[in-house]
Length: 136
Picture 1 (cartoon, rainbow, N blue to C red):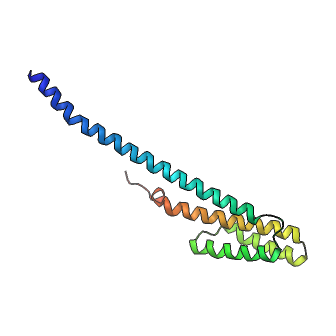
Picture 2: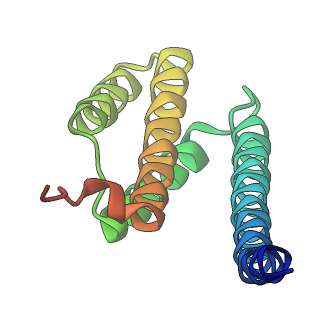
Picture 3: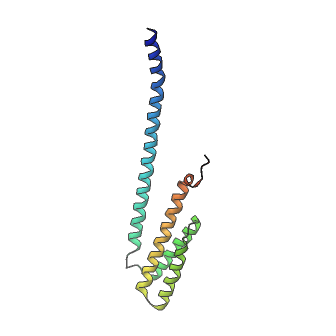
């Protein structure tokens, strides 16, 4: 009888631990799923914006304006890639030469790079813990 009571006592003490571990696991899984859903929704929105703004029908002056706005936003986030400014300069050079098609293509690439750099900044802000080294 003493063995049975000890067994019951051990069982009663372990059940809450197991249940709380399972509930923590569910919370973590829900958090991961919600984060993944948010990232997917955000990337879909960015992809839709890119499709809308990269059409060939956009006037060159408007595209230059969009690139300037994207640059300002990227600079606010502090994530401007080193290759993007060279693209913008090349776009202005081509536009001044009168190569409108080439300039549009270059400006669209620059705008896409600015948008991707902003996505990188948002990812870094959300996952800054990954950048902190751990002491063992």
